[in-house]
Amino acid sequence: MILVSVFMDIEDPINPLADPAALDISELFTNLSVRASMCITGEKCRSLMSRNRQDILTSLKSHCIGLHTNTHSQHPSTMELLADVDYETGCRLALDSERKGHDSFVKAFGQSPTFWGGAGNTWSPEINAALSQLQVPAYSYSLIQTPNHRPHRINGILGLPQAYSIGEDQWADDQIADQRSNQVLKAIQSATTPWLGIFVGHPTRFRHDAFWDSGYFGGKTAEPLPFANVVDEKVYMRSLINLRSFLVKLKSVAKIVGVDELLELKWNERRPSDEEIQFFRSETPKALAGAAKWPIHRPDLDPANIIQKTLNLENTLLIAEPE
Image (cartoon, rainbow, N blue to C red; front, side, top):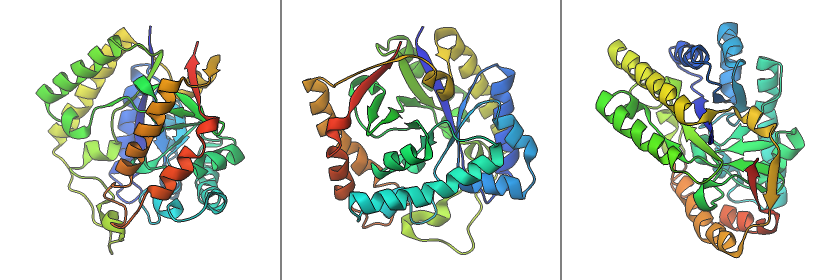
């Protein structure tokens, strides 16, 4: 049976209504005996501690938890920080930034993050050097492109790509949720890889009609930061029910594992084939260029340097498969 990891991002530090949504969804997974892989920002850790929400921190600890960058959409983003510097400078900057998030994560949960996940799917290769220093062995939402969404190792860190996603607006509509769920389930059943990553949303977007970080769009920071509108309670409950239904069906066709369980498996690693190298060279720049267009970023962000720094690490690329 194929292995699947189910990811969610917990990141809204400004709206208190996002807190109970995170708790609701964490408990939904727990009640189904499904181990989720939850990405939590350093800023969200600090927010939950300041609000004394130990109940949420305790609930999240029953799942696999990773660091979702230090501050997510606050400027500079990961790409904004690293786009215009050389690799050595970038390594120092990345470590300084992510160490702050790592330390807040450890303070909140009493443990180190199992993995790291880029905000807005953004990344630069200096992040992997920082993760090595912080002893974080893997990162999710990898923008390194390999055929069939295969896990890989680059510069010593295991990269876990996102194969499929189901968004909050889809969960909120019964018909669309059913259609998209069936599409993803069918794709999983026909997959030829031993593992796939599935993204199922953000708790704050289950509760609100827009993302929490619109105040950071276009490289700017609004004062004050706006709150998104709260969705109708019936819509919120419908979304949770549809997510629950998907997870029940997913359990019947796949073995759901947290990233921590995945890392405990024995892995086979090999050099990529010529075909896989060509795929990496042609598709990875496209993925990085796409990530640079995240609405949060300043309009003049140029990903060319990040692309080149990534391609320079080609000789460290390995294809990885869990046994």
